Each structure stands twice: as structure tokens, then as C-alpha cells.
Length: 321
Image 1 (cartoon, one colour):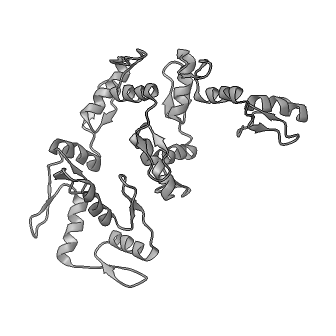
Image 2 (cartoon, rainbow, N blue to C red):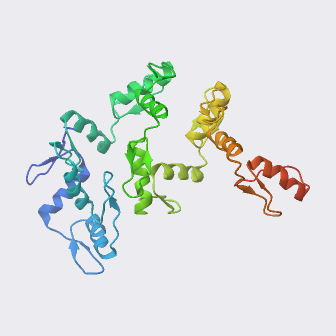
Image 3 (cartoon, helix red, strand yellow):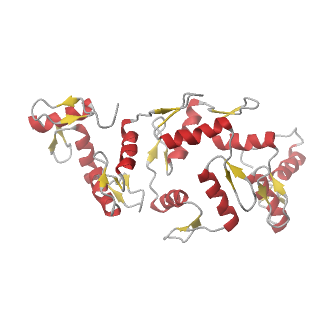
């Protein structure tokens, strides 16, 4: 379906809509029927979702947060109005969520996120995407082509965005700072995620156990604990993982690549966790203590070995060490 196609027409005023559900909601504006009432103040509404929104004015809950400044609102419409304060110089606004854009072409691409239409499909694996640019980037994962090279260390990448992120490791520049605690980040997205730790808002809830999370990515990761799904498979040995991060770590065992190096002695490691453990040998810090005799160790592996002296049993892997 094209974003400009509106096949559902109101027989009363001839206004057209792209979705039948939108037409049904519109028809209520003609009938003036208000069959949904608030149990607290008895105010009536045409639609059930309007009652739900209205109830937030009683509970003082503010589930709608601005992704730009993190200000929260009880009603989505209030958030939409607030977003306009950020859209100066962006004349093309989305009719659905009021998000504004500087160019009409960008607006058209944005509309696809509402229709869920993914018109650009990969001919190799049939994976579909909202944007043609995203498809082009995806195709590089099939060709293994790495067109973007770092001029400092000559490491190459398939995506320009990945190169830009990599360059920050050379400059050490963290341009995005939190106004509340002054913590700085390389990426704007990382700052936005961090800001939620100040608002304490957990806007992403699991529909199975109702556990809530600050970040959508954390919710997606949590959902895998219910499904036991392991969607990330290694193309070399077919071993599967529930988390993409674990797959990336595993791939290093095939490539023998060691991207994490110690700034003190230049020793390199395949995993960031191993580097962190190594750094403790320089700081002499021993954060892993035995619960029985209080002897401390710099590495969790050494603590595990030590515990065997108390238990006199075969090695056991402690999940939380």
C-alpha cells in the first residue's frame, strides 16, 4: 500500500482514510455517540481509548515522554503539541504523530513506520526494510564489502556509521553530555538512553510478566527469556545465541581478532570483559571476595578455584561471578 492511497471513504462527508480503523473512529464524530464512561467522574467519550487517556488525568501517570528532552506527559496529544516546540524549520509534519521534518521525502519515509510497510526486500535472504538506504547497507553483509576505511589505523568497515563510531575511539571525544550529571557519551543515542535513568521512567513493559524496562532493547532481550528463542546464529559453525552481543563475542573466536587493547601495556583481548579483568592487574584492585574466609582476588576465575579448597568438590561455575 502506498502512503498516499486512501481507499476508505466516509459516506457522510466524503473524507478519505488509508485505514478502515481510522474511518470507523471518524464515523463516531458524526453519530456523537458517547458509550464509554469514566468510572471516577462519569465523563463520557466516543472511544474507549479516549477513556483510557482521560483516566491518566486522575492517576497523574505520565507515560508519554519526549525523546528529545525527556519531558513526560499524561496524554499523547499533549506530547504531540510539545514536539512542535522542537520542530522549528521543519514544515513537513506527520498527520499521525505530528513529528515534523525538513524535507517531504523524509516525511514519506517516516510514514512507512506507521503503515509497517517494508517495500524494500533483499533478493538474497528476503529480509525487508522501510528504507532503500537500509537495504543497501544490509546488502553489504552479503558481499562482505568494507568500503569505509579509517585513515588512522586503516581498519575498514562495511557501514559509514560504523566508521564514524570507530573514529571516536581515536579522538576519545565525547560530545554529548548529560545536563543533570555531566556524564558524557560518544553517541547521541547513548545520551538519550542515559537520560531515562534520571527520569526513572520505565516505558517498555513485558506483556507476559509485566516487568518494565528503561530501554526498548532491554525489553527485547528480556522477551527471549520467555521464548527461549536464539535468533542470532553463527554463519561459520551454526551455534545460536539469544543475544546479538553474545554472537559478536563468539565470532571473535573464529576471526582471532582482538579489538580491545590495554592502554597501559598494549596487551590485546578478544572480549571487553577480559580487558576489564586484565586492567585489575595494573590497579591491584581485588573486587572478588570469598564469602567464607574473605580472601580477595582480582579475577573471578581465581575466586572459583579458591572456593574449591573450601568445598573439596569438582569445579562449579557460579553465574554471578
